[in-house]
Amino acid sequence: MATNSYFNNYGSVDRVHGEQDLIEDLVIESIKMFGLDCFYIPRNPASRDNIFQEDDLAQYLSAYPVEMYIKNVEGFEGEGDFLSKFGLEVRDSITFTVAQKRYRNAVSDYIDTADSDGDGTNDDVDRGTSGVTATERRPLEGDLLYFPLNKKIFEITFVEHEAVFYQMGSLQTFDLKCELFEYSQERFTIPEVAGVLTQAQADLITAVFSNHKTVQADGTPVDDATFDANTGGQNTAFEDMVNTGIQADNIIDFSQGNPFGDDIF
Image 1 (cartoon, rainbow, N blue to C red):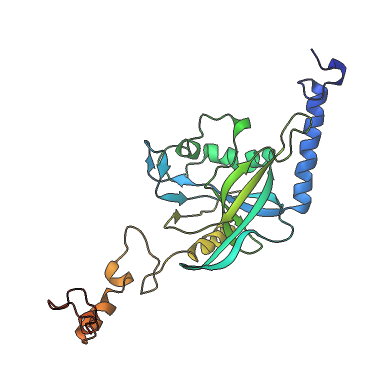
Image 2: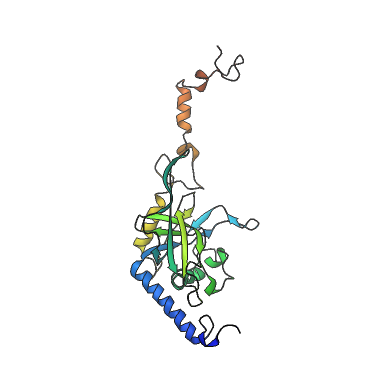
């Protein structure tokens, strides 16, 4: 071989494995010292389309605490807060670093055995990761992270596994590039997980989700299956306008002589 066998830094010998384990332990210890406790919220498909391999209705049914390091030291990235033609938009983005070993121990191992939706199959089967080996498990785009500093939820948009390039021939971390989560009628129920997630933590995450939910006129949250257009919509207000004589026909003339409603001079 071209490389010197006496200085094998990337092979499979026990000496290299020991140094790889040492670097991995140091990375984990550093994140535990300078990181922050976040909550990883996996995405469970509710009705997967087997042709397009997508799911229009996502649900979030569990959360797992894991320590992460924040790579943004000067504030959020992204476009920030700005006014668009749709109103005020917040496009904050942030990058978290999590140790691969800690992700698999604190998150992936629980997903492999949990059945959050009660359909009789484990969550890894629902997420399409049942055929992936334990050492190849990684965070998925579309999963969420609860960031406790500003009490916001961020969505993972990209997972970079080579941010630190092969120290001693191995990879130790995932970089999770995230954007502020935009609620779009996703369903969520975060229960207590014995020994993992306390009821207080579950209630806190659920309350953050609830802040994103649309409410009907009577103040009750909107549910996709039970939304009442007569209650949640503005039909009554428009009907009252018609009944009181405030009609569009009184403002714009759509008569036979003026079918386009334009003023005739």
